[in-house]
Amino acid sequence: MDSVQTTVERHRSSVRKWVRNRFGKWVNRRIPPAREVTLDQRRIFIFPSRTGLFFGCSLLVMLVAAINFENNLSYALTFLLATLFVVATLHTYANLSGLTIRAVRAQAAFPGQQSEFLVMVERSKQRDHYALYLKWPGSSEAMVNLVDEDSVKVQLHMPVDKRGWFHPGRLLVESTYPLGLLRCWTWIDLDLYALVYPRPLSSAELPGLATDTPDGAAAMVMGNDDFYGFRDYRKGDSLRQAHWKGFAKGQALQTKQYTAYADRSVWLDWELFAGMGVEQRLSHLCYWVLAFDERREEYGLRLPGVTIAPAVGEKHREQVLKELALFGIGDKSR
Image 1 (cartoon, rainbow, N blue to C red):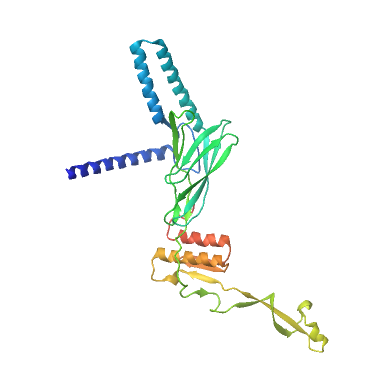
Image 2 (image 1 turned 30 degrees about the horizontal axis):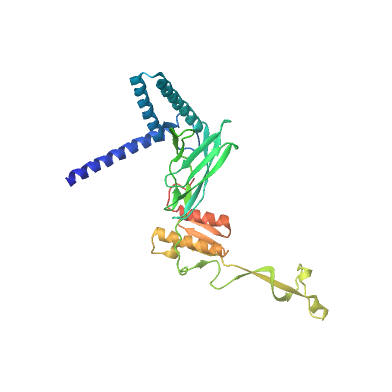
């Protein structure tokens, strides 16, 4: 008996999988991926809601009763409510028709965090749109109205998992306005991807730290920060830095020396974590990128086939983290 039930469950599972695959291919042909999508007849689906199905069953019962009792008032009421259902169908469809949904941006995040996806909903005609429901599978949801403005930006948040490019899937846009008797919806595949960085993994220290200067040393450069000493005056030296007090006392003319100390430029090298797996190396390097960026220290990156010169700043950090996130991934252009 158990074996028969198991076989039936497997058969049902395979049938459901086959139906989902066939439906997914059909939707991909009908609504292909795009950066922006304008909803029209090909992209909108409409079907009675649960309330609408109950309403239709009630109309059928009323019609049978009107025929049975030959009551003209019952006929009138039944056909009036049926007309209301038809009018609601037109208004529900028009509430979605003509909308343009545009992908704006996706916020980069670390695995396990919530990435923010920003989309814009615009109307093409001077028609108000009410109670528009937007949601990705597993994301937060939003309800918007287009009444006083022509467009509105919608923020949806979704947890991301492994590093690389994360695609949220097809966006559900639906509405049951105005009476809730019908559900009008669409599934659109926006060309919107979030960059997922490696998961930061801390380590006690950087083994075999590579720098541009010896350990413990600082590169001395000419500057105006700290007084360093005197040297004999040379032709072309600034008169502002001349040691006039000593010259007034009968000493030879000398020039004051000021120095500035340049910070070490640290190289975060792939070989610093030799013997570890690819993901572990990337996670350790990601941790030290964030650490050096927080301390405002210069750092560079060396990966197989990738070299980024030492620098500081937000753009440099994003460039380095992007290379770590897309290391070993074929398609890097999004």
